[in-house]
Image (cartoon, rainbow, N blue to C red; front, side):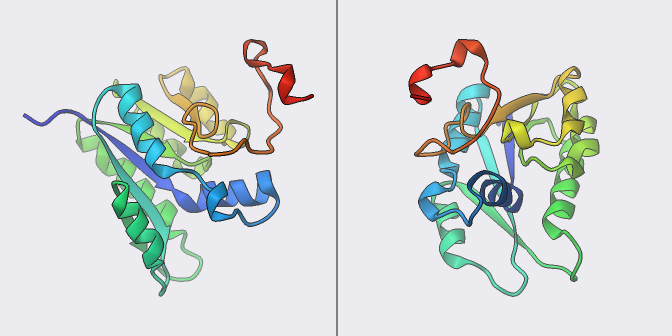
Length: 184
């Protein structure tokens, strides 16, 4: 009998855009991007079951083979997509994948700050474990009411520890986590 799985669905464009536009105010360098293998390990360690990673990316005519090979090497399955101009192919594919997961006995970690997935995430809150991982201060506020229904939230930097260096973020700090040395 196969053990229960956690599906980790990554909206790479959303995370990269948030990191670049909202946190760094420039295009992230490769060493400033998340260490995606840590995300899979975090999911497995947190929920004590195997994780299967799907990394969705828009590849309209150009497949970034170096990145695809790196994803494969760390255990992710790349999902390169194309479509007509104006179609958010990554969002559509993730929405369809979330809907398809309703038919499987599996848990889900969605890695995105995007509110376009709220209805599909809410549909999955049927007793299974469901989480949204991203940057707490940029997560769409429509996810907040779902926490009362069982949605878990993880911060890529502080919970997952997916970055090698601290990010220049301004966030509300719980007093139990406050370290004055970080400000001196």
